Picture 1 (cartoon, rainbow, N blue to C red):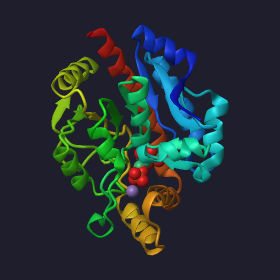
Picture 2: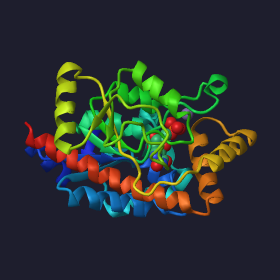
Picture 3: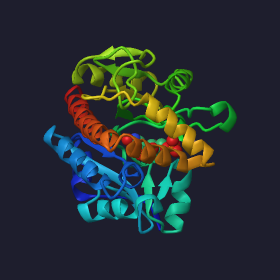
Length: 300
Ligand code: PSU
Ligand code: MN
């Protein structure tokens, strides 16, 4: 077991030369999709990062090591493990390393590794947030706290709409996390672009985002930033989501299992349509994160 991340040669070389690197998480590979489909989403994201001129660094825990930059056989291990992989937030990394478990890092877990590796940009589908019914369950994703205390820009399509998105936006404001809307004045609702709470600022080019990030990190060197990009061909799944959340709650599912269970049920209820949107937005977010990372290096 080692704490120092094992960084793939390509990623290490890029970081050493100050070239743009975009981190990608592995929870969406194992827990976000059914039937190994997370592999395709992960590989597509990596391709899009490369096409935009940055180096992808998919992050996870394997064989007692923090891995930064995974090869295809490594990513396959996460897809094949599915929900039997451990879902690893920042608090879970140490035990996962010591116990040599396959650990899929969430947004929060990935950010903790980005800090160690010196990576400033990551992409995902949707960040975790405040769950519906939080007043009873107190279920609030550690992603939010980890974003608040890690100087990384997270490109996403907002918080998954299986959550209480207005409450999530309130908590991000409380935590002083800038929420930048990519050519939008409202926080996207993951599956759909419209109807969310307001963002803290609208941005319209990679260069503008890079300048805001640089200024924010000069003012607040320890804090993260959310860049929220609306999905291109969104779907209004609100009725399905409400039904899925109610069913999962009735089944007594709690804690870390809630998000994967609701996502799986939304997939089933939408006849797979949710997965098509989910996959596309993950890849598009990866491409945008790379565009911003490239612009950031250029403004040095
Ligand atoms: N976005 C997706 N699919 C996912 C997730 C995000 O499109 O599966 C994962 C992320 O890893 C995120 C996690 O960090 O869900 C949040 O889980 P929780 O609500 O239990 O904190
Ligand atoms: Mn939770």
